[in-house]
Length: 298
Length: 296
Image (cartoon, rainbow over all chains, first blue to last red):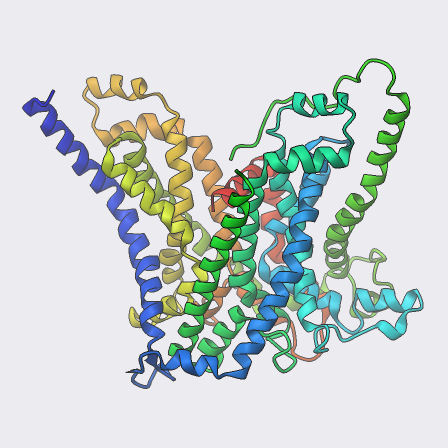
């Protein structure tokens, strides 16, 4: 039924829709889409100081990047950071989430506690750990107290431990938060499925891996992806606040390398080439994770 | 993803007979499971406890007895933190930025979500899809371009730029969550008003908006935490006068030695507003952040 009136009504609807959503679309375009696209353009420029004029070098920044030893250190550190954090964080958080989802005594207070790191800002968290890691901080004091004084360390300033301090902070904050999210997903599993399994004599371990995990598998994939992207892209904050990539470049990650090149060395174009690499790694990782968690799904 | 609510808590009915020994084994298993769980909970609380008590102590007592609560509350660290990093000025900046950005974000999201949810058409699903794609844009990727944008618009170091920029970072999530919420309001409610001759904006103001309050509250909480806690963009976009509290806090750390009483006082000051809100709104905040994490 396409009467003149309804057609006029529909076009009025369309106009109203455009008018209502235009402000948000324009805003998002201006502050997110245009800057994102300009990252790709900037990566093709040689622009070493904001006062100087940029000039086009094509893929010059990328070939320089491949020959830059610090870039490869950052790649290695990023790989270590991710591979040390994620395989501990996700399974631990899943088990913890399962525990919480069974609503054991005290689960409410526990989930409040597990959730607190999510509301502590990056800056407050890093300052807290600065105090914990310092020479006469709580870790070293504890080691000395139990007679392991020889293991006390300048944790942030020692090249063998600097990167691990970042890993520890991410685990500290990430496990509990992820666990609470897993618990939310797991409590959607109907109780009778668990009961039936128990009547069949299934043990808790079997229930976790044969029922709880398969039923939330896609969800676990999503959380793994989110944590992967989060760690990959935003490690600059923790590194900047705790170690500045040092000592030397012992804790230099790709994300911090971008920050360092952009705002410490003011090599704008070069920093954006790192941004493009990060973007590509993030995208590739997302596809790999989705692939893994979909294939075995069937 | 919604949190499952209202499911009866407590133990499932025990299977009849025969399970005595296994039940005992299971109970032992649950008891054992508490050990790592409680240990992790303690590991989360210990640093917070350490910071809070240290903020009321002197550096000497922190060093000599790190975990002992202060014998006498000393507020000198708070005074020094305020004097050194001008924390009250920074808090003022943070409040202005968070509230300003929140207003802009809510206004933009309410309008867009209202359009998408209440005028169903092919175009509205396209627009919804566009904001859905927004989840794929990593905010870190726009760090440097955003800095350049601030420089070229002459708004670098002004609070106004943060107020304008922050909403963009939360728009996709706010709009998608709010759209979902507004869809659950039955169409009839709106139709009767339209027949009575109400304009679209009147419908939004008098019908849809009041009914969307729970959804709006969720988003508002989520956004204000994001804005209050944001560090990296605030760091590059502000200067001494426009610093937010997150940026001011690390200035309490001296490069060589750490004055932990001072630092702790600063941490406590930045955490108090968020924690106070968390205590009051615990359940709702947790739900909001879970929803946010899963959709984001």
